[in-house]
Image 1 (cartoon, protein in one colour):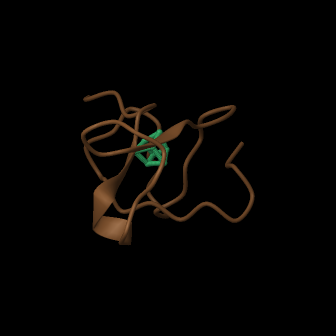
Image 2 (cartoon, rainbow, N blue to C red):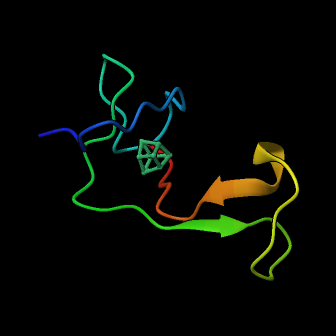
Length: 52
Ligand code: SF4
């Protein structure tokens, strides 16, 4: 079952389904390089990612 409202195009993640949805039970998103403040979306990443 997909996480409601979470679209993801990382096709090589274990949790990514064929409809660009995330099937993980929950996700954790962090700031690239650490800390708790990002200036742009490019500075955030999904820590739940797991390569197929
Ligand atoms: S775990 Fe993260 S990278 Fe993987 S499908 Fe879900 S949102 Fe995308």
